[in-house]
Image (cartoon, rainbow, N blue to C red; front, side, top):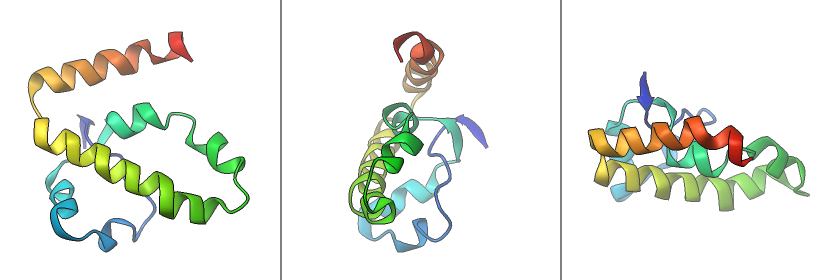
Length: 94
């Protein structure tokens, strides 16, 4: 596990990835990342949905994959520092 990288998701979801989306499987899982920052209130968001599983399948998970793929394409020490800095500051903006 790394400090920055994709958070593990519900078992079985990553098995469904196809094409370039599978590139994120090469990343070490992390404690924080773009998707973690964007969906910091994921539980609350899902609790507001009539069908949370469908919402996760059609909205959240695809967005997480897109964000993790973005991280894959720009992974660097500078990117990691930027994400860590945003993670540290997150409580002050939520």
